Image 1 (tube, rainbow, N blue to C red):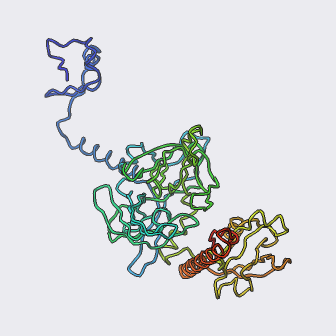
Image 2: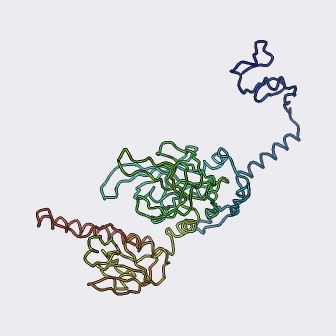
Length: 459
């Protein structure tokens, strides 16, 4: 601090920099010597006055209005009342104007301050891993509040197989959370905590995004660097990304830093509206030190793709209208196609009472086409079925006993009961295959072949 009245004051002192000098009468901002020698009077402090207070109040209201923004609300019916979800009203982007969207854009600092209290860290306890072995460990992710009565959105893979879930807020409060429902194929899940009066984030319009638009995310990278803000741009839209869970999902590509622990957090536009759910990052899977490092390839689920699913999960506990065939499938191996077996999805098991069962589909059938379009894998069949709705009738072409035939199937609606039944069927089938493999190895001296590999695809 340098006092301009100090007889030892040296205007050429390199340490003086930009300072704020306070006296009884005024403040000088910036370079004190510049103010002193320019002949300008320093700004005087206001000692009060109603007009000043009214101006300050007006500015405060304008800032608050700009930060919150306009929006609409829709209500989700609940037995205990109405859950309110907020949706922004920002207009479509016009790239020919200097203002990308109507309304007041925020600085990164304003956006963080306005929204960090609605972003949460999620910790789960997982006691059983994907191979069925009992383990002890915790996984960390992110999420965000979408209603003032305690509904929280995150990624499905964050809470998958969790035996307990806790969410923590920026102010230090934490809550036990229960899983309302999840959608593995779209990697979303909804949690519920017993709390009211929470700040709920506003959902924006991901369809209106343009490449080059700034975006931000708040999350918990590595599970330790809690409530970190990162920023970037929309690098691309409508990217088809296959996650480590094997799900192919439409994504927004961004160069905003997204790391382990960010999964499930909100991706904001410059107006503080959630336009995506951060979900994945591209990385090197190999161990070669010569492999090029991958940077700046983050992905988020467009919020428009999952808005209705979130509402369905809150109301029903699952996404309604999804088709369910009621079969477990595995890919036909490439070596089998060399002997005239068509590529497609091999039926490993059929759920009793399902639409597949009613249509006469049997274990050992190979589904090689749907509605006349060839499918060469379980993924291709799955993607084709996802375009349908429960109640739709489709024609599946199956290969059985060296011949192809068409089967008409009216698709069931997917729900938690069918998912649980398929999961139990998969467990039973896996045990049967394991026992058969062990018996065959014993009888053949350890060189037996247990059949085609089973990947456990069921829907």
